[in-house]
Amino acid sequence: MSEPAQTGVRGFRPVDDVVWELPAAARADMRVPARVFADRELIGQIAADRSLEQLQNVATLPGIIGAALAMPDIHQGYGFPVGGVAATETPDGIVSPGGVGYDINCGVRLLALPLTMGDLDRGVEALVHEISRRVPVGAGHGGALKLRGSAFDRVLVQGPRILLAEHGIGTAEDVEHTESEGCLAGADPAMVSERARVRGSDQLGTLGSGNHFVEVQRVAKILDAQTAEAFGLREDQVTVLIHSGSRGFGHQVCGDYVRMMDAVHARYRIALPDRELACAPLSSPEGRRYMAAMACAANFAWGNRAVLVHRVRESVARILGPEVAEGTRQVYDVAHNVAKLETHDGRQLCVHRKGATRAFPMGSNEIPAAYREVGQPVFIPGSMGTSSFVLVGLPGAMKRSFGTTCHGAGRRMSRTGARRQITGAELRHKLEAQGIVVRCPSNRGLAEEAPFAYKDVERVVAVVEQAGLAGRVAQLVPVGVVKG
Amino acid sequence: MIYWWVEHTAEVQMEIEAPSEEAVFTDALRGLGELLADDGGGEQVRREVAVDGRERAILLVEWLNELVFLAETEDFVPEDVGRIQLSDHGLVASVCGHRGSPRHVVKGATYHRLAFERFGRGYCASVVLDV
Image (cartoon, rainbow over all chains, first blue to last red; front, side, top):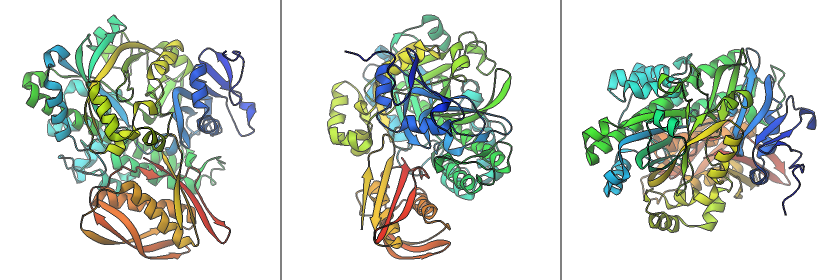
């Protein structure tokens, strides 16, 4: 028998069927409430780790507005929980590198091929194999595009636009169909350390490891025909979803600035419950420097995904022909880990999204003209072997979550826990038995990303839809995956 | 000397107990080496490493981040510490390892729940790695 609806979870009380809240008065150092979008099943899973405590810590940050928010895919991170959202006032609220994370602008990009799964027939294995040959995976370097000096700096300042202009990578439509057109303003390469440059100089077009992937998919179901048409998606179509970030470049930027801010927060009389929340006022020299360096890393990440798309199009051209590659459209690209200056209710705020996705509704000038009548595309990767979803931003997101929704299924089990339950070889066989082609050099890495290590993506997506943050447009199922 | 891993939903948390401060740093390298380990067999190399930090906990983060940097930029898989010298403002060490294919991306050592303390007659430390 289920518990009564009023029953709290670690002090969080239900506001409605999909919102739980802990009042600011619950802890002396909280400045605003902590609020979670979740149903009863998910809040139970969320309460199993330290993510709710981490969310309360976020609620203590100086200048935070409204509430410390968590999406239904929230899980324990470091400092901020993954799936956390915090908006701070400008100019004197804080910015926190830990609130963005080490993989600055980790994000996803969806491509739509001009063919159906029926057209692809037995080409899936060849396509997945070709992608795995062209896309370097794992730790470190190996990208074919090596940029140095001013050529590298121009990517930091301009993102994919300069890759198109100077290297013929991508298309003008790709750039337009990217959050912020792949370029955060204010990027200043002088604010980036030499070590970050060394790490990033040959990492454009590399996937990384962990939960990063390139997945070949089939549109299994259209759930909102009008919006799917605007996004250029139809049933049985072949799509490719790419998940990667700013690689070692972004990791170094984050590390450099966490250390810098850890050393100065006392100067600004900031008391923190967790050192990884290291932060400084946006208006301070350290805050301004971080924003300029973070923008470089965000632009680098968009450049990285642009080169990855280029490699996928090369693979498509080789296996399926150049006309198929030319007809391969970028639906959109969204960032998961970023702090952006945005206007909400007439106020300029700094919105930290850590494992969360911007989800602006129809009418926003921040989204491409082609999508302005329906809303911004959002992509929610499932876990290997399960569905992913295409969503669209809804007006409720502006009212309830600073224009934000979830970013994935959200882990619920540790990596060692996953490895205890299945070996990489067993999982590989299981996925292949489902008809999914797998290319992953590490059996251990594969096991750590087992589907059961994640929450139920369908339940996560149902919550954000019920909360009015984003609506379902299409369901995608995997047919092949390349993992780092 | 010993290190072990604590369950963490998304990242990895390393705990260390050791009889001396130097041994904490040595064990931290071995733990990271376990995460990065490939199938071995590459050219054996020795690297001199110097990092600064007036606080031991911060120094531990910087030490691990330096090893992550070497893994990522030089394919260096750390195995052991040949010599290590601590001072009030940093450490210098000679690190043994091999060139190979570091297995796992470690994005960085974090300050989350970071600790480096006296424990009985020795020291204990805790650090969360973003992976």
